[in-house]
Image 1 (cartoon, rainbow, N blue to C red):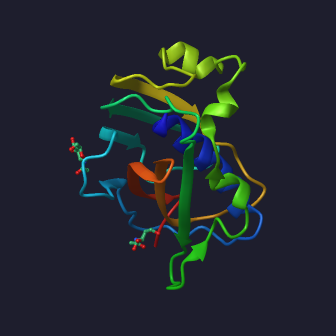
Image 2: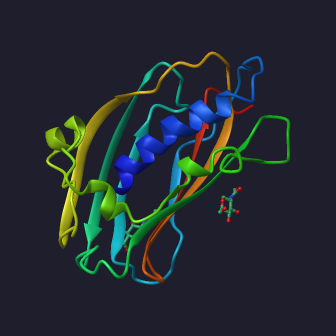
Image 3: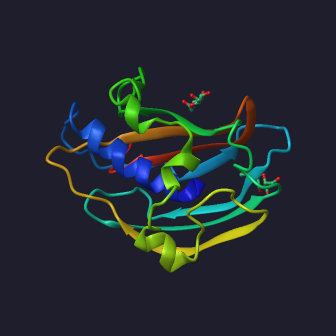
Amino acid sequence: MVAIKFVVFFVAVTFVSGKFVHEMKMPGKDIPFTWLNCSTNELKIVVEELKLSPEPIKLGKNIILSAIVRVKEPVGLDERSPVNVDLTADVVKPGQEQPLDVCEYDEGHCHFKNVCSRFKGKESPKIQKELGLPYKCPLLTGIYRIPKTTFRIPELEYTINGVFNVTIKITEGKTQIGCLTFKFCLESCY
Ligand SMILES: *[C@@H]1O[C@H](CO)[C@@H](O)[C@H](O)[C@H]1NC(C)=O
Ligand SMILES: *[C@@H]1O[C@H](CO)[C@@H](O)[C@H](O)[C@H]1NC(C)=O
């Protein structure tokens, strides 16, 4: 679920940021895709493996994603503790020091309140069906594997490049149940 959200979000971010940034591409060295657990506590949802290629990610080209996510306790059992997903995201363009806050420009793509209610009565999207991933609450205890899956990153009217830094936080009521930070280079980062 986290990984799928990420892909959805990534696409959203590239659209959003494309609206206000355009610059000539510069050749050069690129930073690799990296990710981290952003909590030292044992959380209910833990990403054990996450791979994304190629490096850098290119607009209009495919990305290949694979992931292993462990859910240690059911998520979304109690409607009184809604599950929220919140992101922070910024992009640093080459030659600039000040990161650009992506979420400032589109709150809607960074905050997903009560995600369980969004699934209710909805058909599972094709990609989730194909991967055998659940699309309802509660999300049961288990290990969810996303095998190497290809997604297409849409092309934009503008060119955007730089280092994206994204943090995904999942909460259930007031409790943090998942946290992941990742960084990737879009187009080129020099
Ligand atoms: C994040 O935590 C999980 C579970 O403890 C571990 O398997 C994984 O390797 C960690 N990821 C990173 C990048 O440290
Ligand atoms: C990435 O974002 C997180 C959360 O907003 C922040 O704590 C961290 O310092 C950022 N890392 C970099 C390298 O900018």
